Image 1 (spheres, protein in one colour):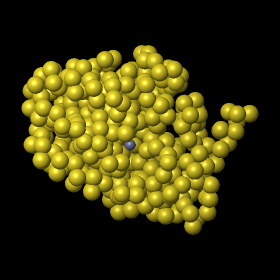
Image 2 (tube, helix red, strand yellow):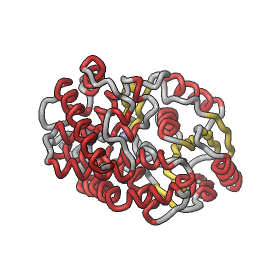
Image 3 (cartoon, rainbow, N blue to C red):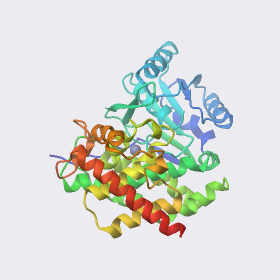
Length: 368
Ligand SMILES: [Zn+2]
């Protein structure tokens, strides 16, 4: 077994970097298709349009249909072909970005990510999460390629609602624990190899950055401003979490997220919000020490991430309601089987209940 790390070709992050997009794209192609998400403000659209025009790159635009589903991928791929695009740009959130990967990689287009929120690590990774048209988790696809350019304008991200940044911290919260578990179990990451030292270090740095800067970044973005803490959290949410998850390894936390998507009550909660609860569930499942779990819980409470099933809309904790989620979390091929011991749906159900009980107790203590 070998070690392997996968990285985007170029990652650019800073204030006012959007107008520079043309300079970065000029060597990548001549005709671009821009997929615009619902969170793409006109200011982003205008900056991309002007930046490409400056360099003589043709630009066509299409609005995102709302879900990263097979139908949406086929629709956008047809438009890319009709436009003879050699570059595809995704401006928006994680689902826009996943459609852009699914269209761009098979057609060998240059793939460019312009995240407008920092709610997931999707912009950095090669992995695509597919959903049904109704938004239920439908599987994961691996392309074995990472974006040619990830262009992160922190001012755009700081202007977006703070809940996105916090959800991104939830996605980043699992990174170290999943990578560390995969390492201990000698399980390959999604690149097919074992974790390099670099990926593990970055996964650990991701967690340490959350603890150090999470609350300060939240407060700054509530005011719509960029501070060094915001810059470090954006890097943790998008870059460190992406590399840590893809080239470190995954385990129970993301499988618990995948399972929770089967419960319609959780539909309005973001990926990272469910992953945060999945992280606590993973720690319970692994029999971690209370102080380790408490550190994670205190972080969630400080930045406002859900710690209980009730905070994800799930109030019916009966086995009839929760077992389908536990079963989906343990489906064949799920990453939960990267845990260094056999995991059953019953174990996941019990870990979710126990995590929920701890979450309730720690929330109550904090309020009291
Ligand atoms: Zn994730």
